[in-house]
Length: 471
Image (cartoon, rainbow, N blue to C red; front, side, top):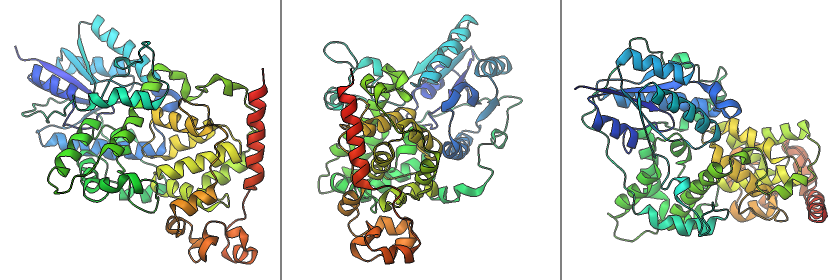
């Protein structure tokens, strides 16, 4: 009997190493490749503006990939359950396949939808396409979730070599819906051309593989020493591709090994794999502690005395007008490209949460809206790590000094000069601290620091001491 299945694409926008798609193709004669646009079901964590830009182009690339198989991506609007039922009725599908998601809203939605479909007599099959190890399959000796990265990584690392990427299904016989929507009708692109700097990115499966090639050729061998240097292309820049599932961590690890096996000199990829382990740790935490997207992981911080919300200060931080060069360079890079170097993300977050003492959730919201790689698990983990309230967090009293940090990791000021044209001609150390020469600062047009770094550091430490002594 010839059967048809629906593969429900979500954040698995690729054809290779897509376990649910491969399983659907193996078990059924025809597959309906379906994307459902229902942002209201994702609540306040629906994709932000930068993510919507990426999503539009990624879906377009996925559609192009499916056309190689004489089909195309089928798009529907509206409630997920209603859309799936309509697709089932239109195609006679007997099964729905999907790769699992781990954020709280998706898990709630999926349970309700899948239970309803099974009540309808529809087979539901779910797979793991995003992680090396499911969050519920890795635990401490006490059978509890990990709260510290290092033991988590020790447990995860041996499992990485046990999983392999799978090939793109071939042949892949695709079925279509009679009344599908168009990608343009999703209205994902910004109405203003603020995203013109995003064109340096190439969303989609092919773009992910090209970025992996570039990383393997130019950077992975120097990753440990260059990953903290924002003026260099020392990181993989695969984070948005991983978030949208255009490439999997299995493919990254296997791809690096394959590409590097052709070299005469051995290259150590362990530092980079460990960094991918942090991504996995973030999803582990989000699954087991879903409230940490907005609530402190460490409940002791519920009593921390944040400063009153200061919208004027927040806007200066968002616009890269704080008067602290490395912070402003990062915030301007973010606005222009939808991305920011990881070291600079820590510095901008530290400045907001410790020098300005604004709540970490305010920064989390801004990153969510402006990052093309905005990932709920990693966004929450990163902000709480810097703020001191998270799992395996930096101690609150570890307050990054943005001047010494930029002197260490951007010694000649190349990164600062790239993003702050007012300082392109700054002599020597003034590129890191232009306020040390009042005449130069005035002539440059760059703003004076909005706060005194030393004084605000002391104020933050005082607030932390208050937290320690509160009952």
